[in-house]
Length: 286
Image 1 (cartoon, rainbow, N blue to C red):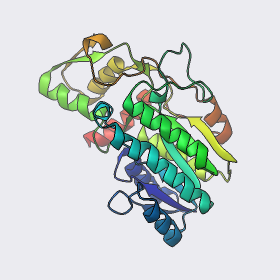
Image 2 (image 1 turned 90 degrees about the vertical axis):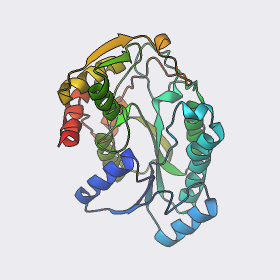
Image 3 (image 1 turned 180 degrees about the vertical axis):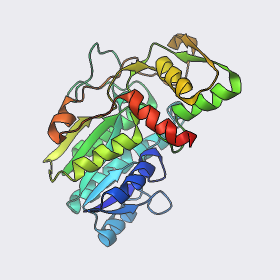
C-alpha cells in the first residue's frame, strides 16, 4: 500500500517516519506544507493524481489551543477546511482517509469514559475547529477512520513532557493542575496502532470512529510528577485547581476514553501510560 502522510514534521508524522522502516509492505510518501498545501484543493488533486496513494494519514493540525481563540479562522482552515478537501479528493481516488481528532470535542462533563457514539460539545475555538473537521470527514469521506486521541507527546517537537523537563530544571518548583483528568498518549504507540488498522485489510464503508490513548487514567499533576521522577530532576510539583491557572481556552475536565471498540476490532494491546512514558523518556534522555 502507498500511504501519504501529511503534516509529517509534527509529533505523529515523525513517529510514523520512524516506524515506516518496520512496515516493509507499505510505501510511504511524507509531506508537510512545503511539499503539499492541504488547504489548496487543486494542489491536493494534482498530487493525488501524480502519486496515487491508497491511504492518507492526515497528521497536519493547528494545535495551539489558546492561540486559536485569537486565530479561529486559521484553526478552521487547517483543522476543518483542509479535512474536507482531503476527504473529497481521497473519495475520488478511492483512498482510505485516516483523520486524527481530539478529546477536546467533548465538554468533559461525563462521569465515565467516553465512547465513540457519545455526544460531542466543543468548548473552545480549537475544539470547535476539530469538531468541524470531523463533520467535514463524515460528510465527504467514502472510506476512512476518524481516530480521536488525547494528551499527545513524543520525542519530537514541543509537548507537555519536554515542557515539564525544561521548567523543572529551570525553576525547581512547578504548579500543575490536578482537576483535569485524562490519559496521556505516546505518539509512537498511536502511530503503530494506525499502521495496524491500515494493514488489517479492512475497509470501512463510510467513516469508522475510534478512540485511542494509552491505558490508565491520570491528572496533569500526576503526569508531571511521573515525568520529573523518570527524568531524575530535583523539582517540587504542587497541585492546583484549574481556576488558579486561567487560560484563554476552556479544557475538558474529564476526557478519559473507552477504547473497547479499537481493541476488539483490531486485536490491539494498548500499553499502560507510565510504561510508554518511560520508553519515551529513555529516548529523550539518550
